[in-house]
Length: 306
Image 1 (tube, helix red, strand yellow):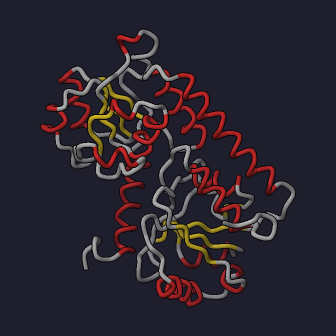
Image 2: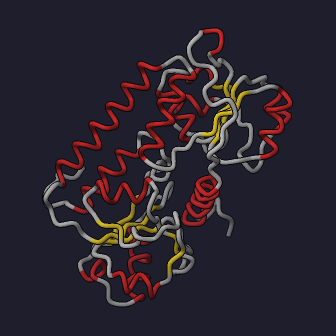
Image 3: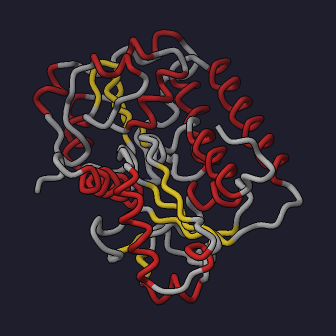
């Protein structure tokens, strides 16, 4: 069965792309500070490869400046009308060149894209939104580059206020031990990846009032075994399944897989949850909505659910 026909395989494909981007984020950028200040230097023809950076550019009020995006750029709806130019690993270089961009915004690293931009004299911005602080930094830097500093300040301020409100709501409460799946085999509990220290997903659990059972692991997205999950004894299990419509039958099947693993506090308490929002793995300011959802999962007795 193809990944298009199977929603769990589709989720697996989306997550694999996310992990490839997260693992390939470059600390280096070409001409990071260029474009700020004088109006003549503000980019007007942008190609945005990452869904998070495309979303941020639109949030800054510069969506009209985006000429091309990857197939993963689906929000806001205006992006659905933009030409698709391939992604980080399958770029349509000819189509990109024909659009005559003056800025390429990407998360990750691509030698072919950077070579093309160097040849054409196109500036490149590598976003580093792999943490909550990195999201804010990306907003501020793109805001400065696009002459939208005021909009960037507003976005960052609102982002911090919403995070602060969540922290306040869960303050002083018992913090359940949380296991988060970022990716695994659809039909069985195998090749399970979770989030370690230093990731925005680890921060999400902490802000939502939980304790990441693998938060002491230095690797960003480690693969863990069933035995290590059993040893960690999570009180809550949260499975991230972006773009999946989790039907009752599917939820029942996946909960049965956890029951078959062995005795776990989360399973005994019926606290296995699924988060299928399409932006649950996109490091943009919208992640605050996912953090709020996780807080409601962890502390449903104190926070009114939707």
